[in-house]
Structures are given as C-alpha cells and as structure tokens.
Image (tube, rainbow, N blue to C red; front, side):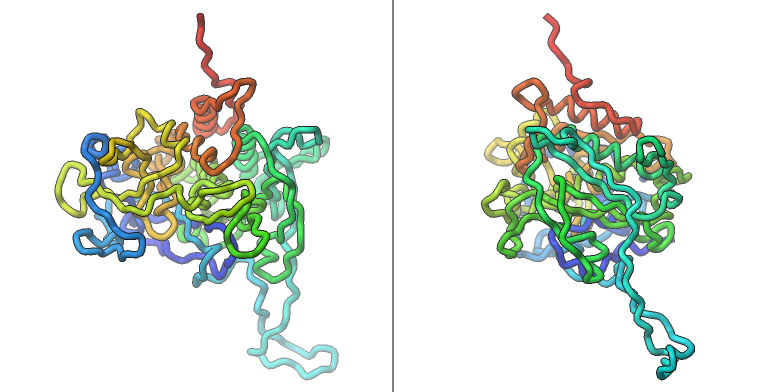
Amino acid sequence: MARNAHQVLDDLDWLGEDNLLFISDNANENAPDETGRANGLTHTTNTAVATAVATAAVLGLDVAADAPVDTPGAPDLSDPPPDTGPFLSFEISGAFLRNHSLEPSFAKPEGSPGGGSGGGGKPPKEDDPVDTPYVSPELLWSVILGEGVAGGTTDYYNITIEFYGDEMLWGATFNEETGDYSGGFIDAFLGSAQFLTSMIKYGYAESDYYGPYPDIEAGEAVSKEAEDLVIEAYLSDIDGVGGILGRAGPYDLPDADGDDIYEGFPTAGLMEFDTADAGNLFDGSELGGLWNDTVLHEMMHVVGFGTLWDQATEGGDVFGWDTLVGDTLYYTNGETRRPMDRNYLYTYEGEEANRQAEGDPVVFLSDGSYRLAVEADGGDGTARGHWDEVMYGNEIMTGYINSLDNGVNAGANYLADFTVAAFADLGYTLDTGTGSTVDYDAIAASGSYYLATGIFVDWSDFMVFDVA
C-alpha cells in the first residue's frame, strides 16, 4: 500500500529547516536513483557510478540556480524511478520556513461542539465552538549532556534535552537515587547527545530563546535560557504506522536585527516522532534496530548538518553557510547513456570535509579539483541537505537510511570522517583532546561504534598511536 509521504506540518514560520521523516513502501515517492540500489532494498555505494565519477570529468549539465528542473537537455527530476521496494527516507521539508497543509500536532484546540447551558447564559448551538484553554505540554525530565555542566572556567559545548510526555509513553525507568530516566526511547537521545558533545568542544554564550515549540504554535511562548542548544523531544500520536514519522530541526538561532541572516549557532530545536513509527523503528519486525540511527541522524540536523547549508550569515561567530553547497547541478550517466540512469548531484564546497574525503568517492571537476557530492534528488529538503545516496550508500547522513532488509543488516550504517569535518565547516570548534589537531578518524569511529552497538564510547578510545 502506498503511503502519502508528502503531507508536512503547518505554518512553522521559524528559522531552520524541518526534517520531515516519512516511511514509504512505494519507491515511487522520492526514492533515490535506481543506480544506487542493491537488491531493491538496501542502499549501498554503487562502485560503477563512483568509478565513473572519479575518472570522468563529471560534468555534463550546468543549470542556473533559478532555472526550472526541466531545463531542456535534462530529464524532469520529479519523474519517479521504477518501483523496486521499501525504503525509509529522511526529508528536510523546510517547514520552519514555509507554509504547509497539515494541521500541526500541537495546534491550539479549535474547540468542540458544545452542549448544555453555561451558568444561565444562552446555550451554544451544537455547531458553535467552545473555547478550550491551551495547556502547555508537560515536561517529564530535563538533562544536560556534555562536560563542564557544573561550572568551571571552560565553556564546553552542552546539549540540553527536554523530554515531554509521561514515562509510560517513553518506556523509561526512573531512578529515585539519581533523579534520572533511562531505557526505552530515551537512551537513543542520550547516546546521540553524548556523542555530539564529545565531538564539539566549545560552547557559545548562553542566550535567550522563545519556546517551547508547541507554545510557539499556540502563541503562548515565553523567553527561556539555552545551554548551549536546547532540544525538545516529543512522542506524539500523529497518524499511526506509516505516513508522517515526525519532524526535527533547529528553530531558534541568534538574529539580533530580525532579518533572517544569522549570527550564531542554533540555540533551540525540536525532535518529534510518531509513537507508532518510533515503536516500529525501535523493535518492529520491518524496521527494528534503526531507532538509534534515526535519532542520531535527526539530532545532527538540529545541530546544523544540512539544515544550515543554505542559510545566510552575518558577523558574530559564523560565516559562509550559504556557500557550502554549490549552485551548479551535475549528473553522471553511470554505465549507460539513458537519461533516467543519470545520477544528479550538487557539489559540497566546505574545505575541511573535502580535505577529509581523499580516498572516498568524490566528484572531479574540470580544473582537477574534487568535491564531495550532495544529494539532488528526493524532493524539497532531501536535496541540498544530505550526502548523495548513490555515492555514499550506508553513510548515516545520506537522505535515505539503509539496512531495511527486515533488520537483517541493522548496524551497517556508519559515520564518515568527512561528515565530522562538515561540522568544522559550519564553524564549530571540534575537540582535539590533548593534541593540536582534530582526529577525524577517531571521532568517526566513535560514531560508527555507537550506530552499530547503541553504546557510546568516547572518541579518544579509538585513537591510533604510532608505535616506535
């Protein structure tokens, strides 16, 4: 049964791009190119395409940034490839920037049909709405991850996670001695935040933001403090298994003059998942084992991977985000000359990630330089916000999560060193430990180990020392 993968959340006119996740068992809906599939189920790097990209001067099609995708000479990018099987797609929908059609899951109630009198007043008609007071979501637990949370002279990078809802919904266990929760759906958030706060070293000045996000939707937001990034986590009954899996992304960044040109890193973000789909990813027969992968992927978007690549910056602590992805659209033909076999891609322009990509599949330009490949397929948001699926397969920050063969290959997704370096390109200061340079391989190994086992181990334990 094909599921509607195109419904997204309503009128979230706030900064940051919403990561709309959806499950579809119809590959006609925003699927990657067929050349990137293996066995119709698990996406792996297509070596033939990668070799063609690395040896041929890629470059066929130059499409102006404002040109339609059906520019003469290029097939319509919206044409679906053949239906070959199920996949799970991460989509950055841009819903924090634009208006959409779906009623937000935390919308202020419109009221319900009334009945009876109201203290002697005129009884409402059956179709008259009755005002229902808005109630803010109930905070279950707030926890700060990262070093230096008890104070000190060094401002380390911290992530505060606020879990909303009851412990039964989260499947969590409360420890009366420590006051902490663990287990169930919560552990994936804790492990992902532990990894990211071990990767990024320094924080930034604490700031105010308006939240929580459901209160923004309801017009009831108040000023709050961030340390350094506050992530609000929700499990909600959205639409059952399939359809909308959830939304995630940053929603508040420093913007002193309100011109949508930003001066600093995200201070607040949202991660909301449909309870039924979360259960399917956690231990379901079809997608079980992919919950950690999904949460880490989405949390990296909240921190800024992909979601900030096209955002303008000015002054402050950040610069150049809107130059990280090139505007030229390229294609490769792979092994054939058929238009539908072309893999479309953009180039990634960040210096540090490209430096780390030596030896990986890359795009060689006519001047002899090379670039990482950014996804151009998959619809609004998947494109220009992820690594290219055909080129990088099981890397966790492509737009299509892998290992969906009924959980048989769960744990096969990995984190690449160039993905770690992409955070340096955003301007984050990454941890060097006791050394003077970033050990991208060790940090990537830590992330990959977490994806494979669900256990966080600090990257310093993966450092390789030369033996004299």
